Length: 409
Image (cartoon, rainbow, N blue to C red; front, side, top):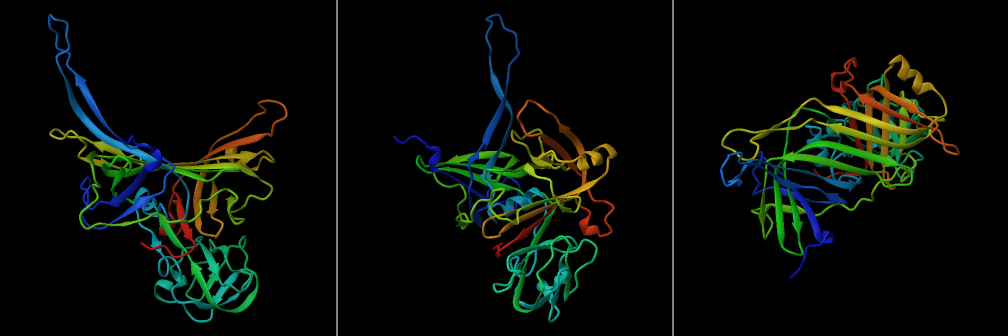
């Protein structure tokens, strides 16, 4: 008789069209994980009835729920559907699957990219937002593979992208065949759910957790480590079978094979504070947390919850940095807002840029705990809506720009 091994577990998920109903059509996807914690919990109430035999007469199930999460190493495109669901939104995809479909002939100055003819349709540069990050591709140019940011003050047009002065281009003329690569995700209010299946292949057991809504996410990057992530879910119920519960006419897609990220996997991985690179400031680690405050809703007549609802977004970033000066501390004392940007790319230049446009420094601690140690500043910032932004689409807590090769929906 075979006994189950964690080395033979496969995670799989499929987007639900009806909360808590396992789809019989559509696409399911394998999922790369380093661990998982999905479980079905029954709450049982023990009878409090008094009897002369001093016995307990019954124990009855009064509620049930399924919840859990995945732990993983961040890699390109593997978790994009889950991220979109977490943000209760969809990716705004530039060009074709995030890559300019019709190449341009581009002239580059230090502060501008100019197309020889106007870009149109899904390829239009004018669809990019102020402050959006993108990857520039031109194999024979010094600008190939560079990560650029659109100016935060000058909107792009169909022919000109004005660059942030902190991401200058190398001057070049008539670069035929140039491509811009980017897609953007921000938060919204549309809840979506998944059936997530835990497949124990060596013993032929399949547990499907239904109605799973992403509740919160944590991303962690540190010197000397792979970049890790976790996404927690809250859902409705579960079923067990001896074959996959995601059946019918569904088509399964195996996981992608992009290399995992680390804090040093690409020299363009960066952290900005206050709208510019952290010159002279060295970050040991950064952790980003995003929480939808999801809650389950129960009702008479149903053991499991009948629905889930989202609360107020709670998001924060925690940085551990070598103490060198008091500039951020001064902002903490003065209650001055700042901005935070974190880019995480794999060795091939594919990855994500997380832009947090309005950050309040919640706490700042620097202490000498013992001798012969580095003085570290531990900083926590709370992410707030950028309500003062003149552009409605940019009044956000956080924006994620995906840069790299094309991503199939």
